[in-house]
Image: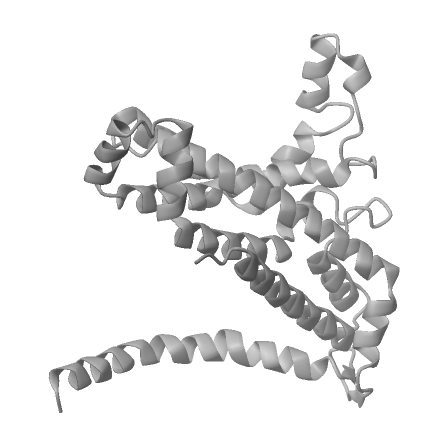
Length: 289
């Protein structure tokens, strides 16, 4: 066997345990969930095969489409909020001074805090009576801006988008810093000589050279946004009147509140399909020669 053949065999053997674990805990449950989506099942007892009825019911349900619309708001807010903020911060904090390391840790800190705690904190911030946000607005004489931030269906999805953005900037910051640090210093020096500084440096040098990293970040952003559950569930529970319902909370309520496990499995499969469509669409839009 050649050296390249032995190396390939070694890589396959090394990856095999991780692939087996991934298959057992991710791939098999996905197919198992899709399978149960064709049944009427309450979680216990016998199941009844009903074909595509669960999927058809979900697609006919206006609450499902409202949840999808709300999820798309989270997706757009995440891509338009998390990634630009993380990219700008990565340019500012890419050096390794003590202060910059401290700020990096502070930005990343929400990732190590339980989502339930973050949801409770922001729930108190938005509270209409004792919330600090309305208190600050009242202090500065902006009484007309005071709102029931989580109870008003006209603004509550935008309100819950803020903590979602705030809590998830950290990973993209680290991702972008790593990518920018891989840009050769010779390229940066040459760009400065040619006048590519400030916005030109970002647009003409940084973004093209980390484009593949940005594409990966968008994939992670889309998949993470479609799985959004804990923050919204803690702050609003999907209410009031399903105005902040997401696909994940819609699936949870139908599965564990009314014990429609077959229907919940169908919804979870639809979430995967929608995620794949959005990810594929984003990659097609970001293709470049």
